[in-house]
Image (cartoon, rainbow, N blue to C red; front, side, top):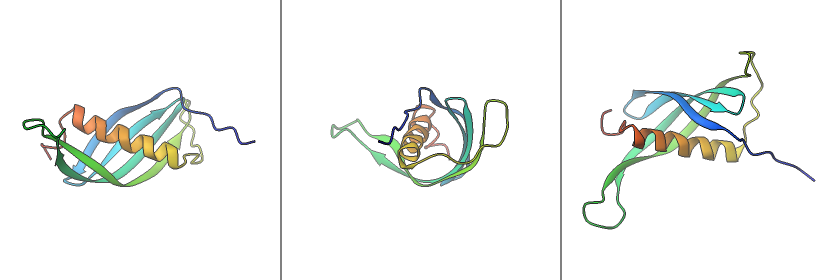
Amino acid sequence: MLHKSIPEFTTVAAMELTSKNSGNAVIRLDNFTLDVSFDFEPFEDSYGVPGSEFDTAEITQLSVDHISDEYGNPFPDFTDYNDHRNINEMLVQHMIKNRLLGEV
């Protein structure tokens, strides 16, 4: 039986949009720090009600460039599909919350 643990703590610690469609971010995943780069496509969405439009994005590519443990030591990439999906959603939510999409 395969037991998959779910991270207890995940957050976007820092983000920099490097162009209109790409960026870099630092993700905290439990006791690990992940340096990631990503590409995204911004678009306008709504809740189906006039006046509810908002800017959002879809992550089209995610790369885990470097992982380090809590002491700063390099660590092999252990991320899987679910981790990437969750990181993608966190990146989009961070861009929306901090209104980064309309300012690129």
